[in-house]
Amino acid sequence: MTSWFPFILVALSTLLSFTTAEYTGTDCNPLNKTCDPDAALGTEHTWLFNSTLNSELWDMRTGTLDYTSEGADFTIKTENASTLLVSNFYIFFGVMEAHVKMAKGAGIISSVILQSDDLDEIDWEWVGYNTSGVQSDFFGKGNTTTSDRGGYHAVSNADTEFHNYTSYWDKDRLEWWIDGDLVRTVNYSEPLTVYGKNYPQTPCQVKVSNWPVGVKGQSTGNLEWGGGLVNWTNVPFTMSVQKIRVQDFHSGKEYKYSGNTGTYESIEVVSGNSTAKTVINKKPAETLAQKWDDLGNGAHIGVYCGAAVAGALLIGAFTWFCVRQRRDGRLQRALDDGQHGEELTALADNKMRWRSSEIFLQNQKYQPVP
Ligand SMILES: *[C@@H]1O[C@H](CO)[C@@H](O)[C@H](O)[C@H]1NC(C)=O
Ligand SMILES: *[C@@H]1O[C@H](CO)[C@@H](O)[C@H](O)[C@H]1NC(C)=O
Ligand SMILES: *[C@@H]1O[C@H](CO)[C@@H](O)[C@H](O)[C@H]1NC(C)=O
Ligand SMILES: *[C@@H]1O[C@H](CO)[C@@H](O)[C@H](O)[C@H]1NC(C)=O
Ligand SMILES: *[C@@H]1O[C@H](CO)[C@@H](O)[C@H](O)[C@H]1NC(C)=O
Ligand SMILES: *[C@@H]1O[C@H](CO)[C@@H](O)[C@H](O)[C@H]1NC(C)=O
Ligand SMILES: *[C@@H]1O[C@H](CO)[C@@H](O)[C@H](O)[C@H]1NC(C)=O
Ligand SMILES: *[C@@H]1O[C@H](CO)[C@@H](O)[C@H](O)[C@H]1NC(C)=O
Ligand SMILES: *[C@@H]1O[C@H](CO)[C@@H](O)[C@H](O)[C@H]1NC(C)=O
Image (cartoon, rainbow, N blue to C red; front, side):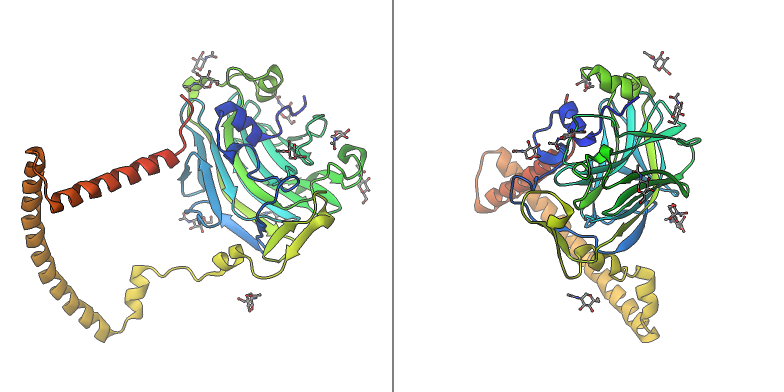
């Protein structure tokens, strides 16, 4: 069987008919637009997924991550829901090592991919009906005229055991490794890459997703690939990620496309320290207990005295709060009575601002199409 559905993000776009660029695979295609440069990773780092990912480096575009002691769960909890995590950094050739348990269930796709702004792509994809295998795939410049590039690899208990899925990518070759075994190599120049034309060669983001392909209205080919319709009585469908190591083969600050060929020669590496590197090397914030220990004994006594004063202030503030509450109560009554005053108008304005910011936040949240 061939992989009928390479472009998971395009798939999500048709599936959920979103109007934002979020699901179309790319926010800005540099081959026909002027886009901002891509922020480089510029270093190597391993992210353990058992504690909150830094939101400066990772963006949860849809769904939520559920952290456990062993990793993060990407869970489809309700009909048509999906999850998508995207790195804010790009690598320009490098290594991506993901330790993953796939989601089990017909019509469910787990995926860890590298994807560029002009839609070069290097994939690991697990189809939920087969817990004994994984598929490897690649694309160049969003070319899907043929689906003859998929590879099929045996893995035991892919849903219940973490395995090490590593993609190695440089300008000469692409390799897929499972638990330390090389399972597939694609060279830059061979018939399958149309002699380099379809070879992935532009800076890529890491994208991790658990999403349903098996929904009504999907093409027969896609349904077949995914193993049929999702049986929604079986939610939740959970994919777990223990850790991801990413290595960028360049060490600059950002990547720029020059011209519109999309070849690796056209990528300009801007030198400097990447934002990602700065964030990664930042000294972790001290815990409160550590800060306390860092203070001397004299300081401790000072803090105790301060606390006593604070306690007194707190009582005062509480008293003020009670008086204030009663006043607000009066204002409310005035409002109800249809009376108006300057203070009253200000109060109402504040409530409006608060409400609209709440509405704003709600609109930001992912919501499945009803
Ligand atoms: C941009 O270029 C890509 C790849 O060549 C093409 O698929 C896409 O349709 C183009 N988009 C626009 C808006 O021209
Ligand atoms: C996360 O996993 C690492 C390695 O397995 C472990 O050392 C660490 O204690 C774990 N952290 C949490 C918060 O569970
Ligand atoms: C699952 O995938 C493996 C590897 O491609 C393959 O050998 C096996 O036949 C597949 N099983 C099913 C049920 O399709
Ligand atoms: C797309 O890929 C096919 C082979 O998979 C190739 O024949 C065709 O020339 C490619 N199209 C473009 C626009 O590169
Ligand atoms: C995962 O596999 C890659 C490729 O074989 C290897 O370099 C790496 O050390 C492995 N990671 C672990 C944690 O064993
Ligand atoms: C890829 O290149 C290596 C040598 O660099 C060669 O041994 C191998 O046969 C090539 N594979 C294909 C599929 O062309
Ligand atoms: C899920 O998506 C399918 C296909 O678009 C649609 O027919 C169905 O009504 C959706 N279900 C829900 C609960 O949104
Ligand atoms: C869906 O799953 C439930 C529970 O496993 C099962 O009883 C039901 O027959 C399944 N439905 C279909 C259409 O397969
Ligand atoms: C990059 O960071 C290093 C170490 O933090 C510093 O020495 C160097 O000057 C920085 N380079 C630039 C171009 O900012």
